[in-house]
Length: 304
Ligand SMILES: Nc1ncnc2c1ncn2[C@@H]1O[C@H](COP(=O)(O)OP(=O)(O)OP(=O)(O)O)[C@@H](O)[C@H]1O
Ligand SMILES: [Mg+2]
Image 1 (cartoon, protein in one colour):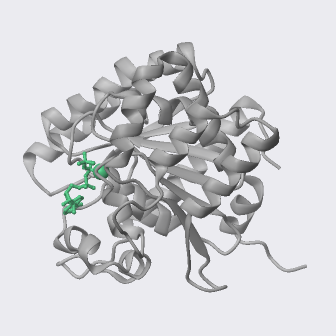
Image 2 (tube, rainbow, N blue to C red):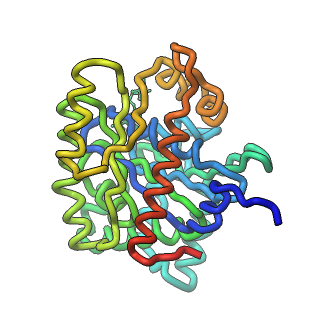
């Protein structure tokens, strides 16, 4: 019998994971990490989706091959969920047809696999205003919409905006797991702590008891005294073992990636200026999958 690689076992075992990436503070690397994680987890056996839940549309500009004015985006999906009953019948059919025309698929061939993205444009800010106008029920409808879409994928990564706002709230409320991304600065760590202390408990209490804080990723790591002082504080602030073991280095090549527009090969073949490869995304992805497996084991869950 052929040996089944560990990666493949994970791909077979894990299904329908929804994972939000957040920090209240802007510019900490949420989008960079979401996209790097997508590259690291891409595998011919996995169906991968990235939902851009940020009206800035940074992940969209990076990953979407054909961005144009007025294109269908997450805002349309939210509006449709607010307007129609998407749970069954005609509403569900209309919704799924909208989702399929909004989703962009990019394939890297049978050996590497493919990914899908649901893009965002500024129009998503208007949809957020519609959600706010409709009150609480709106969140439930958007949560249902995200879950419905994600059920077609093995792993959904949601890149969220840098505020504790309705879109972030809805993303977390639909998610199984939350990953916080911070830099080694006081304000960035504070922004991550805001999510952990304010939005996360509310989401857990009122919408989604199952969501788990999977960990904190340290981005823009440099070998300085300040960084080394901040790192041990993460476990103290967020809980033992929550800091991912591998930090993401501050790196010119990471900074240049969005404008080069070949994210998969950039992450796989890119080099830091010291010549080392960009292995941190692969290492964090491995740790993330084993944390997810451990969480399922702890809770006695099996995702067929
Ligand atoms: N490890 C890194 N090394 C160098 N530059 C980085 C690194 N991580 C992110 N950057 C750069 O820092 C800027 C902010 O990163 P990114 O857009 O990923 O943050 P964000 O948290 O998604 O921002 P926002 O809150 O606006 O959504 C970008 O220009 C990005 O290229
Ligand atoms: Mg971003």
